[in-house]
Image (tube, one colour):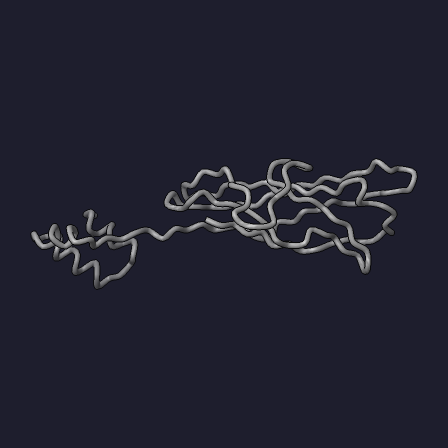
Length: 166
């Protein structure tokens, strides 16, 4: 494979590849490159979706005021070297709901109860290697003792959207 072939493979255009092969074999290719003909790889990241953060069964009795629950999960992000370091944020409301009852929770990529995940861009920079392989990103949730209050038993749930920018 010649440099001209890999140059065009990025775009995947068959007619351009044939033209550049022809030009690469002549002095015209050098002149064409000198006037700014170039290609750039697309900046690509892929993200696995569907991570589940589950706090499990929590017993919060009036007699146990110091109750907290932590949970963790992970998902993966796969970015190529040409991308900027990816960031993560979530503008979703962070409240578990059961009927008319609401239970707020916190999100972090540091640790349970760690620095709160921002709700707006630019978000938290993900310290992943950008080499085209799946990189694990942890996600932690925490419900604080004061948020349990005197909520009734039930199944509390919600869906959130995480935004990865690069």
